[in-house]
Length: 205
Image 1 (cartoon, helix red, strand yellow):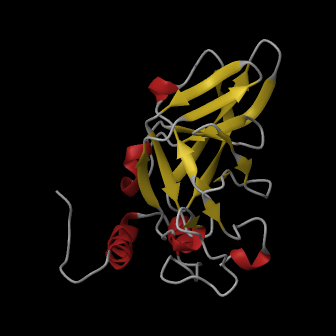
Image 2 (tube, helix red, strand yellow):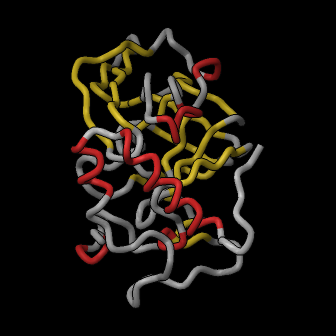
Image 3 (spheres, one colour):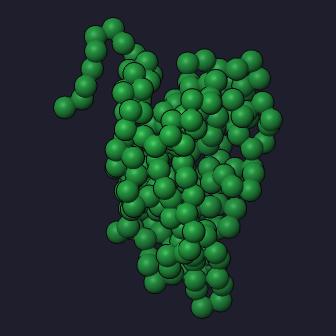
């Protein structure tokens, strides 16, 4: 059952529920969530106006939205198919291009090995990493996942996302362009307009 309050838009309701859920978060996550100025309530003056068939990253919300997608996703390294799925979940966050999380059943674990190290996301929790290993290549920490995400993001538990700067990633046969910046893993396609976090200092808001 979907929780609703008459007269409240989805973005306002999402923020109310986020405040409630923050009571159970560690302090580092609370601090990370409180730093942002934009949360999808308006576009900044420097945002690119999307066409009818495009999405502005400045219309995406904070907290990020989970969007179940039937787009055809393929992840490759050379001739090797790492993932092939039509059951992804897009994470849509203000100022960032989507990240696509793919279910384990659609991954080729012959090429995946759990890597060392973790990182923290104020929205989703603690991420673990995956190495890609083929007979000819070894790519360290090319994918990541959340084994025990925060409750709002439990749907992506054990789903894996990949860095398009290291791998060939495709959405409906379109080659994905990587999000600028050393750490970010967003997927940029012709469907997305920004500027996105990582390519413009003003996008860190």
